[in-house]
Amino acid sequence: MRPITSKLKVRISGSRPASAPVLMMLNEEEKLKRKISEHPKRVISVDIDGTLSEYKHWKGYLHLGKPIKKVVDLIRKERRAGAYIIIHSCRTTSADNEVYFKSIDYMKRWLKRHKIPYDSFWSGCGKPYSNAYIDDKAVNPNCECCMKEISK
Image (tube, rainbow, N blue to C red; front, side, top):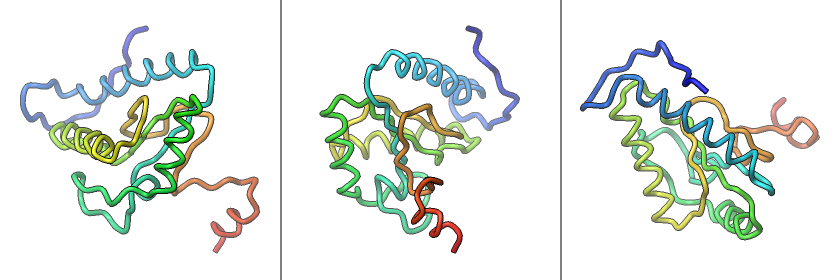
């Protein structure tokens, strides 16, 4: 399959080509779709800001709050049961390559420091294909309590 290219213009820092983050994201998406289709069990995507880490307000690309214990415990439990865990974040949508790569590196180091297991890391716009999403911004339309909350 031929990679999809983007007309996105970015400021280059260092020797990476301007399209590197976009092409990397698309190539990673294809690899991830392949892995997911081959995985026999559940695939769970977990957002970082406000879901996996405490989030009160934006403090910059290189800041994450403390881990939220009940979510970390859930991830560990699901992983032990054989689920494929994807950590995802849309915080890396900067058009600046330097910010993009530093931000991803920072988030992966944060996950490692807090011993949070995962199989894949998804960054950029949109959400990866999964059987379940754990996200502070999600609303289940089949949940009466959730629908009341959103209509406030």
